[in-house]
Amino acid sequence: MLLGVISDTHIPKVGRTIPGEVLERLAGVDLILHAGDLVSLEALEQLERIAPVEAVCGNMDWPEVRGVLPESKVLDLEGLKVGLTHGSGAPLGIEKRVLREFEGVDVVVFGHTHTALMEERKGVLLLNPGSPNDTRFHPKRSLILLRIEGGCARPELVYL
Image 1 (cartoon, rainbow, N blue to C red):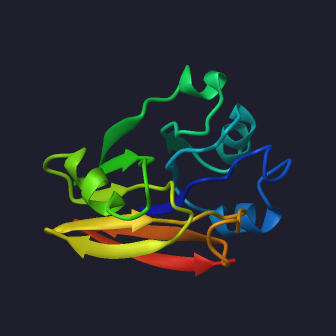
Image 2 (spheres, one colour):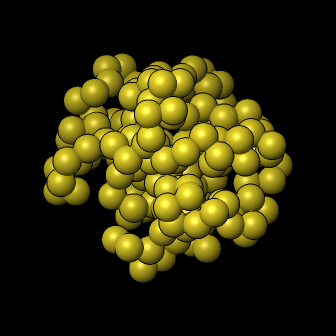
């Protein structure tokens, strides 16, 4: 199973649409995980044209998004438990905060900081894809392609 992992698209505040380069990189994935701050439902609709989407809301999302998306969820993907959340507060310490949100997961996907991260803590793979179109807090735009096979998660950080 191949997943596209993104966060912090901020549509239409950062751009009118998700950049074509991002959509091209996501073409062919089986599922897209969006870790919040879509802002409007337009971003969700664009992504759903490529693949099914599992998403959560973030702190910047409009009420229309908050009305349809939860703040967090746990997904069972190919035998792995994946926690999906946006995260909140200051960037310093966000990893500890998102880890505390979930119990018994193998992977936690989060956003909020706009800075990509792939690391293991306490036996849990932490993934933050950064932002695929916003460079306010980090100079590089990014996303993660995550392959799940045989109970293993293999992430690849993609800079755009």
